[in-house]
Length: 420
Image (cartoon, rainbow, N blue to C red; front, side, top):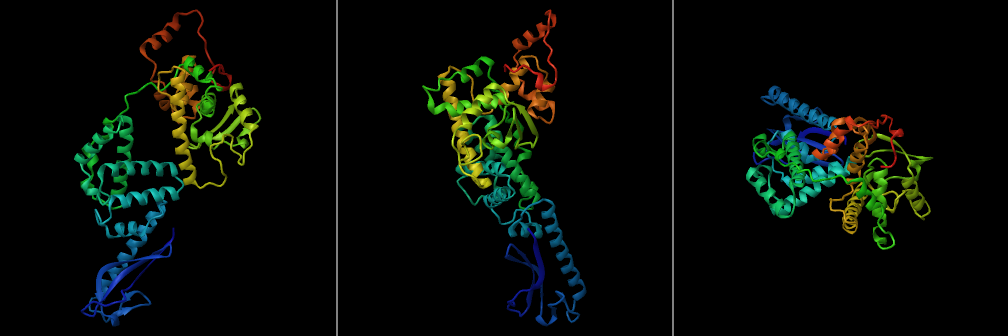
């Protein structure tokens, strides 16, 4: 990430015989030369000190300007270091010039953003940006589009286009938030002037999901568990992954994919969630042990529990691509399982996590305890999972106040009932 700068004369003189003074920056064995707007005679330039000699009529003032530009360049490099951004020479030039809406297309900047995220190991974010970029240019059909050309009218049309492809408010909101983040980054890096920012008028906040039911009942969970594996062998793995997730406090697909046998320690699964880095120590319930035993006996060239990543030493980008492909297949299989078992609710990989939280709440476990079990940073996140309680359900819970015995569960998650 280190870069070096130097102020020097350009090799070729102008027609007037003057030599332009330039800033040369070298990074990753690549160089860029930026003109500083000052010219001089070759005899008036001191190559050793990178300064004008006293023989230049205005050497004091012009040397002061050159020193100031050099300090600005060093400051910009320091800023990139603080941002932990493996910057490109184009990004350096745009920030150094202080130019707004410089001659870089939105797609060029977008691709640089994706590349930076991949280099930083943030492959999930990189894929999200790439998916939105692909979607946007299918709509725009203009890869030379500049930031300043994307206005409220275009965003409205893009929203209409997304709806025509079947996208709902939630999915459209994801695309628009990615676009908004790209704009904010472009403004921060001097690629686009803030006056062209369209999201002051176009409100992404209006795009909120309509809260489709995301949690299954305990009966529906049992229906998935009871899928006839002999009649539907092609759906066995997806069924097992869903049930494994449900019985392991809603472990997400990415963490199941990367789970290794080293994470199985005695009667516990010990791992850190990839998304939040929160550590978990989960007791292995009988249904989970049964699934583990079935996969333990299978031959594998890797140490992964589930045969999703089939090779060792995959790059982060390869892992991300594999995850996207297999997650799509997983969700497709869950849709088929729901149809076969007569489940009319939408079933996706994330439903296992929501169902885990909701069913425990129905059993009387406190929101605080559920929050702890799921590794949420605050109870507010857990509360969002539990919004599906309908008024009738709340009324039923409320009637428990006059029942003779009210079940009270301890907040120690290891003492909860394991029937869910």
